[in-house]
Image (cartoon, rainbow, N blue to C red; front, side):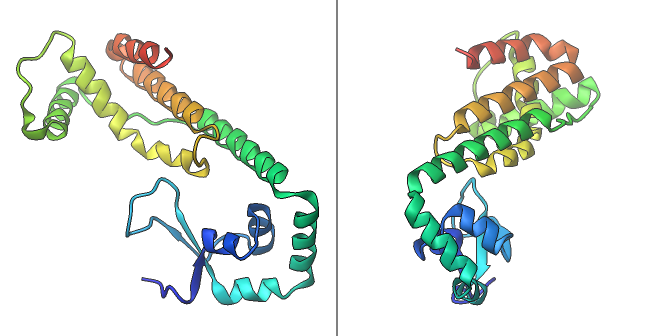
Length: 196
């Protein structure tokens, strides 16, 4: 675990008067990056060495960036940065190849039924309707594609996040339908439900 007095979070760097653009251009990549072990968050935790932050704050480049930030106003730069981040994430979601695991039909049915039992407390829920196995299989396969949700890490709040989530889910359903043509009607049903 890192010593909290040696590192400062990205939010802490912002509180010191930095903008996101200044962090990216003057500090570059974080010294430590990963998931916060204390709480669940969609965005990765980024930590910068405090000594490095303080050293950059003493440079003429930081003084010039701070004065230009104060002169230009913060809201326009933040909006442009958020829009650029949204466009980059949407492009990444569109370009990323989604790899659906290829399983024999019996194995897929077994894993989907087990996944459903684990997801519903105790596995209860009564009898299955005729379309239930296809729903379970699509649900299981979509869960196996959850690792692609890290593509959304760059979006915070509502700045394009809903649009990117819908696009990613649609691409996941399309990839499942391409890999398992028998599940295409269920995937199309889910796409239609989510596009309402």
